[in-house]
Image (cartoon, rainbow, N blue to C red):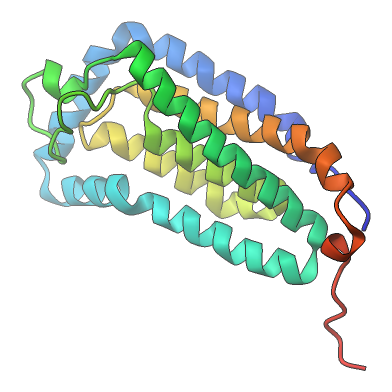
Amino acid sequence: MVHRSSPVLPRALPAAGLLALVAALAWPVRADVYRAVAPAVAGASTPAAVAAGVASFGLLALVALAGVLAVRSFLRDRAAFWRLASGGVGVIAAYLLSEALKVLVTEERPCRVWDVPTALVCPEVGDWSWPSNHSVLAAALATACIVAVPRAAWFAVPAALLVGVSRLAAGVHYLHDVAAGLALGVLVVSLAVVGLRPLVARLPRAWTQERDLVPR
């Protein structure tokens, strides 16, 4: 097996940096943005239903994409499969780090701070706001898929952004929660793929060789 690096990885750090910058710039205006967006969406039945649906179930589309790519790459491109598997480790690491940050920062949900209508019911007390776990997982899954199969970006990037924005629109997160979560997901998965590359290179040949799918 030839271990090829993904052309996506060199772009991941600037992408994560840009998202982190958006989070920093959004912090001072977080209340204004939230109070402008959340009640406006909640007050319109169709946008509210769409925002609530994407906010609650949008991650499933990215999980499905990762599953399809895992099967396809295992059969046709083992290098891509192991990049995706390494990205999967990063997804888990990103989620655990996000949970740890939530406990350390303990930022209250905006729907508990501001008395405005929201498309989703506000999470329970103690379910902290920063960073957005849904955004972390969306960006992490999207990054893992794109690192494995770059053309998956056509679906994965819009899907991850929609999941993140829907969390703001549904009223359960500030904009900086979403942007920081997206940045964290991209960064951790990218680092995981790079960090695990030497380990993948030492896997037994039987695990990494391509299958001959053409009947003889």
